Length: 227
Image (cartoon, rainbow, N blue to C red; front, side):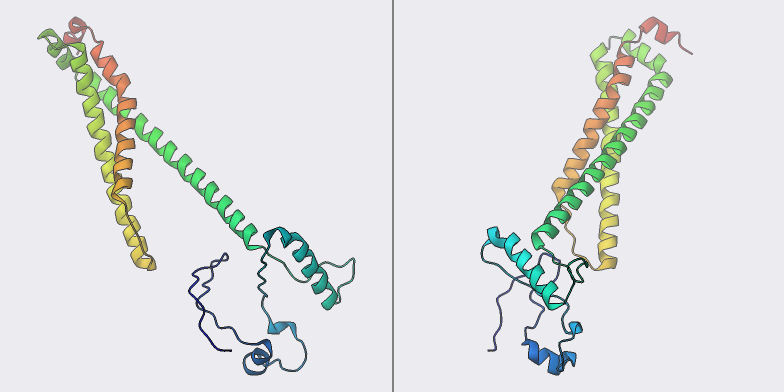
């Protein structure tokens, strides 16, 4: 029988199921593997078995193990010289690895956001100290506390958004360069960049709130006398 199978894509082990050729075992031994005489184990790398009932998988796996041990003449107390793998177990392990990697990336991103937020807060505190007299002057000529608060909050927001946008651009350039060198396809979603800038702005507002509150609560008289 000669024919072409339908397209299936990648299998559970990451191998292409479309870049394969199926031939009889006897033909493989005589024409490809050169093992027509005898039953050498080098003639096979693996055997794929597909079952129709997933509930019968444990019983079938046990029957296969018993049959292979019998065919390989393995003593009862000797270990197996073969390995039986279930694609479902491979997928489960791969999913667990992906989840672990995702948690690790989230933790690294969280630490980076906290460090960046602390840096923004320190910059804004230095800015409040350096502009203490200007803050006192603005308050003396009629600026309200919320005006001073909003001034420093907007400055912290702009600072964080500029940093977030610069980081997103650098990350996109690095991803494109790596994908180009490795020959991988790449897709950079605009929503991902917007989300990154949104988180950066949220961090800027959160960590800029304390310096803004400190600037808004300055005593005008003490601020004008500050050197």
